[in-house]
Length: 80
Image 1 (spheres, rainbow, N blue to C red):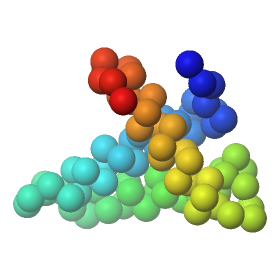
Image 2 (image 1 turned 30 degrees about the vertical axis):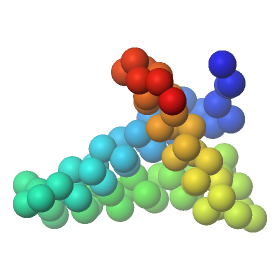
Image 3 (image 1 turned 135 degrees about the horizontal axis):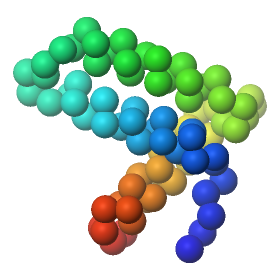
Image 4 (image 1 turned 120 degrees about the vertical axis):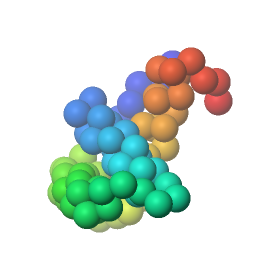
């Protein structure tokens, strides 16, 4: 199993970002103001983390998202 190149706390922030994003994207979400505020806070934490790098942070975020989703799938017993 390949080891993540990102620290566990950053991976957790990304997984939480995904959950909040999905909740906000749901039909008729409840608490949209709070969800948007949480998404902004999590986005700030992700994009200011030094592990993403400063030259191409969008590429770093794409890799972070990929690794977090892959790890999430393994933790809940999914394959892929």
